Amino acid sequence: MMKVTIQPNHLEGEIVIPPSKSISHRAVIAASMASGYSKLENIVFSKDIIATCDAMQDFGINVNTYPGRVDIISDGHLRAPIHPVQCNESGSTLRFLVPFGGLVDKPVVFSGKPSLMSRPLSPYFDIFNKQGIRYEYRAKMPLLVEGELKPGIYEVPGDVSSQFITGLMFALPSLKEDSQIVVTSPLESKQYVDITMDVLKTFGVEIINHNYEHFTIKGGQRFTPHNFRVEGDYSQAAFWIVAGLLDGDLTLKDLSAQSLQGDKAILEICKSMGGKIIEETSQASQASQATQTSNLHILKSETHGTVIDGSQCPDIVPVLAVLAALSEGETKIINASRLRIKESDRLKAIATELSKLGADITEADDGLIIQGKTSLKGGIVDSWNDHRIAMSLAVASLRCEGEVIITNSSAIDKSYPHFFQEFKRVGGIISEN
Ligand SMILES: O=C(O)C1=C[C@@H](OP(=O)(O)O)[C@@H](O)[C@H](O)C1
Ligand SMILES: C=C(OP(=O)(O)O)C(=O)O
Image 1 (cartoon, protein in one colour):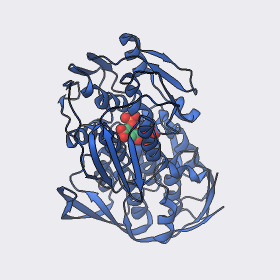
Image 2: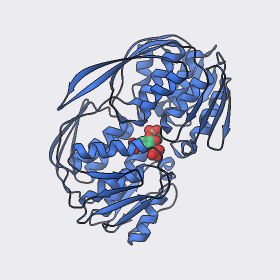
Image 3: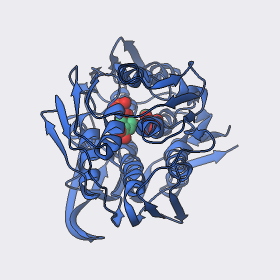
Image 4: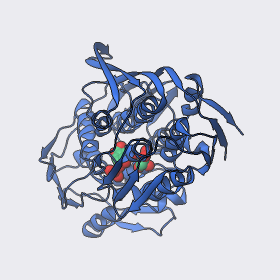
């Protein structure tokens, strides 16, 4: 596992934001379900996206990868994989594909790194128990699913992960009769469900949303192939936005101004903290649809503390904690308990590592309390093998007095393999060893 050493410095220049990982997973899966040829453009082959491409290949779909592009040729039918579907560390891959185990005629085994196979799956097990679907599972071990998914009412809690709802939304439209997903507690990460429905619509599948309390899914729907360009990722843009506010002058390109991504909230949160973000919107024709793209100019700013609700945008919380640690006054991050069930316990990880750098940050049950400082000391920190912790710590280094060494920094490969290259290109002083 690699480590990086970063010397504090000012960042300046242009960054083309990588494509949304969430939308890329969905586009690969939807195109795989469609009979015909789909061309997906603007794809970065992070480990998570590779896991989804390989998994669909295991389900018998012809997934051809080229630099920056995926071509999918499918007859719209899944076949039972002959060996375990390797989901690596990708929660999305595992949770989006488990219901497909109930669409094929043989048992399917899903495997992954122990850290993935210990993330919650119980909402699926409750469904399998009701539907008489056999499963075998022990924490950290592969999961076996055998049985037929039947149309009906699917009850799912709203506060474990929205990824269960997305997974069901991919599988249920192919069943013969109609189904309903009933959300049994207020839904968190709502906008991830919006982007699922949006991608499904693009690929010809309609789902009706009744106020995020239940969803109606007509059976017998067919996915239609589509050529699709993936828009920029606001969860990844968040690192550069905070970097720019701490010590930069950055221009970020390829973000959609009308994006449905929940992590677009980064803009309003940072502006409410006093961040100088200038949005320049222009019309662009992307593949078949005309969209508005934003260029964002991010300028070094004096920011102040606030209250941040993490329930709808969990992935940007770690980097917002970095901004808060370097903003005047107190910040409270609330409703963020699900950060504890991601690649690491992200509340504990970011609190522990930022404290090592000299931040004043304490963990609460469902959030963080942070007293801001003007600078941090620097030191040796660890990524907890979590990409968002590694990138957040790299951003924190910009306002440290001494160097920052991040161990297990190759965790970034999960979502943003060229993050450190980009960091260096805009002026970061990094050595890798
Ligand atoms: O559907 C998605 O693409 C995702 C949903 C979110 O998970 P939860 O719904 O578990 O919060 C998010 O944290 C994850 O990185 C990606
Ligand atoms: C939690 C994440 O992804 P996943 O759930 O797909 O592993 C993430 O990218 O931060």
